[in-house]
Every structure is written in structure tokens, then in C-alpha cells.
Amino acid sequence: MTDVLLALAVALGLGYAFAAGVQDASNAVATAVATRSLTPSSATRWAAVMVLVGALASWWLHPYLSDQSGLGVATTPGGPPGLAVLVVVLACTAGWLALMARQGLPVSTTHTLIGALVGAAVTTGAQVRWDLLATRVLAPMLLCAVVALVVAHVGTRIGRRLAMATDADRVEPAARVLLSAASTASAMFIGLLGSTKAILVLTLALTLAGRTTDGDTPFWVVLTAAVALAAGTAVGGRRIIATLGDLMVGHDVGRGAFLQTAAVTTFGVVALSPGLPVSTTHTVGSAVIGSGLVTPGRMRWVTARRVLVAWLVTLPVVAVVAGLLAGIAHDVVAALPNG
Image (cartoon, rainbow, N blue to C red; front, top):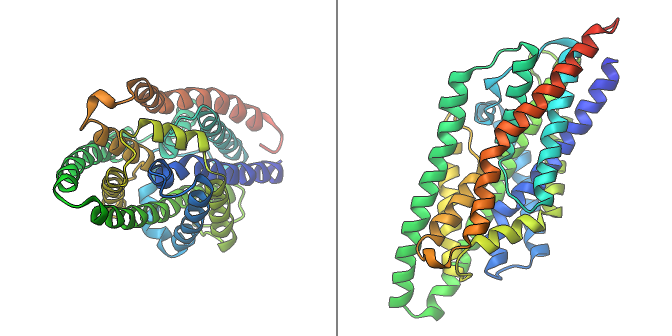
């Protein structure tokens, strides 16, 4: 039973990494695609390479970045029942990310995974650190969104004034360089942060199955998580990219450069702050909205409302579904002779 559950947990953990790559690809390339700086195919391929580089770098930064995942807010039961709970958590997380990608809606992979873990912990009697959930998960994510919105809004206003006062032929090449650099940095941060969560859940599966002790992470876990995340990025959530492009007001390169720089600066600074997880999805999406508010009459408010609703319902919906299914899975496995 343990071997079967471990195999399922590893497969679903890699599936989660792939789905996270599909979701997060838009956070690195949507602005470049919307401004026609890159085609969707070339953008996602380049982002996949940078995501792989960032993910492999997590092998050295993993001990430092583990606090940034936010997964410490909830625990899982021990032994085979805990492994069964983890299987349910990963299935719900990957399933929700895939469903939202099909709908073209960007959602936070961090919120989704934490919501599933919290819901499962509540129904199985495991510990939930509600104080940490509020102060080190929800508050930093809200802070990132607000800061990115404000910085992108102010940056776009300044950029528009500079563009009007400067020759456009001189501004556009510099804006393209800035946009390329910001998109590349975004992809590397996505690789660092996204792979850390996948590595942690795979390591947890090995620990619950008794295959590793003290949370030691074998290199094959890092490598497979990195490859799965990069593969998802290469596939790219084309519908999500289109949604963010539709949400972006004005597809000029200067606007795209300013909002992408605002986003990567915000989640880059927060990611380097000990113990503060960050949602690249909320940060980039908020930067797009903040830039669009410079000319609110041109905002696609229907699209913005769909995105905001998806952000708000993700954590509670996944928590409820994962909690119900995890409670059943825990009790069934615990009742087995070897449970």
C-alpha cells in the first residue's frame, strides 16, 4: 500500500509542477506576447529555459527558499494515512490549476496548494497555524498585489510623459531591452519559487513513506521537479496569456516594459525576504491592472472581474474540496490492516 501511495504522490507531485508551469508561464511572457515583441511559441520556449535555470538553482538555495513556500502553515498526518492525504491534496491542486488554465484564468499556484493543505489538515485533525496563514501567507500576498499595482500605475504615468517628450524611435528600443530583461528575470524567479514548492511536497511524500529522513532531498527530486515545471512553461497556458493580454490596456512596448519591471521588482524583493511567500500570479496581474488604471475608460472590466473572482474563490474552494476528500481517504487507509 505504501509503495502504491508513494508512486501516486510522486506522479501527482510532478503533475502539480507541470500544471504550475502552465499557469505561471503567462506571468513571464504575457506582456512580451501582447506587445508583439515575441510570438507565443518563442516566448514560452525562452521562458522554459529560464525557468529550468531558476529551478535547478533551487538545489543550492532550497534551504533558504523553503520558508518562502508558505507550506509550514499546515501539517499532514504521519504514515500511510498521511501519504493518502497528500495524494488527495496534490490531485485537487493539480486539478484546479488545470481547470482554471482551461478557462483561461490565472490563479495562484501557492494559494491553491496552501488551500488544499489547510483543508486537509482541518478534516484530518492535523495542525493548522492560523496565525502564520494570516501573517505570513495572506498578508504578504496582498502587500505584493497592492505594491505592484501602485508601482505599475506610477511607472506607466511617468513612462507616458517621457514617451511624449522623447523621440519614439529612441524610446522603443530601450523599452524592448527592459521588457526582455524583466521577462527573463520573471521566468527565473518563477523557476526558483515554483520548483521549491514541488520539491517540498515530493520530499514530504518520501518522508511519509520512510524513504528519507530529516527532510533530506535527493537530487533526482530537484531535477524532475525542474523539468516538469519547465515542460509546463514550454506548453504555456495560451488562454491565460490571452486573458492577461486582453486585460492589458495599450499594447505598446513601453507600457509592457514598465508593468513587467514593476512586477518582477516587487516579487523579487519579497522573495528575498525570509519567510514571506509570494504569488507571481497576483503580482503580475495586479501590475497589469495598475497600468490599465492610468486610462480606466479603456479597461476590460469584465475580464478584470473574472480574474479577481478566480483569485478570491481559489483558496476556499480548493480547501473545502480537498478537506472533504482527504478526510475520506485518511479514514479509509487508516482502517486497512497496514494503515
